[in-house]
Image 1 (cartoon, rainbow, N blue to C red):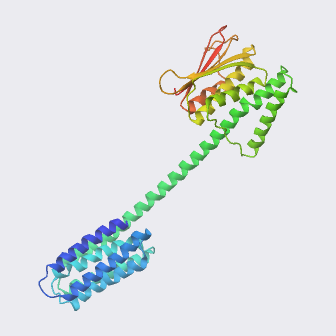
Image 2 (tube, helix red, strand yellow):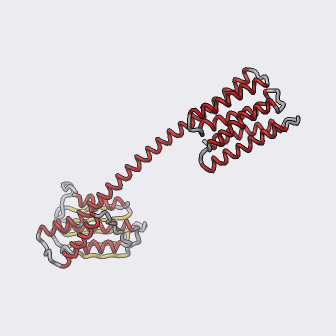
Length: 365
């Protein structure tokens, strides 16, 4: 709105400069009045552009001096006796009323400023003998400038409030989404670590006092403490091999033997390496829980599609299952497939009754 009213004032000042410059008579008061209008405009609009809003004192000075005093001085002491010669000074009242309509906070102040300008127009044009058509046209321009400026300002403020409300709702929804994602990630981590350990211990298939089992329980107890304190940070590994080695070590502590091979692994973003490690760990947990062999094979290598990706496979030689009859559980859906999908990767399961299970993790898809 500052720029809009500035352009409006600039157009009026341009008319004034042209009107005064074309006069052949020596009318020093017109030059002084034009200089005053230019000075007040520079002061008021310059300060508004710097601050981002009008100073009401500058607006009142513009209304009183430029919009009211200047036209009356030109009529009484400036030697102007024709409406056409007074038009440029009266014209400035329109931009004064527009600035007052948006800058003065109280409605009474706006009405007072417009009323003063209106009275000035009526008195000034009466002094120079203007016709009713000229007076009506200028009064209509004065009132229309104030009304249109106020309507535009009201509409912009209304749209701003609507936009602020929409942004607040979007931020609230995003915060809810982040909290949900954080809870989901904690659920996955608990499923893949603490729950897997407790399930194995409850089944009685391992010695709970074995050093590696106790070490794993200690790590997971520390994780639970951080989770309760809400200070648990995701451990993003720099390398795929580091993430996979941690996954292998985690399941081997629960007496699953893993034969792992790595070849020409590429550099990937930390979140992708973490996703590979977490998904591979859950795939190995599934082998320990369901395959019944106690032995898994993990292979990691560079992708062959030339895009710098990676492929990790987890294979077991267990009984397998029928994919058409099997409903994937939380481990396969949330900890394997969903983790890879979140980083732009893909997890696929290839199995058949009596053929074992092959889980392939690929990034990018």
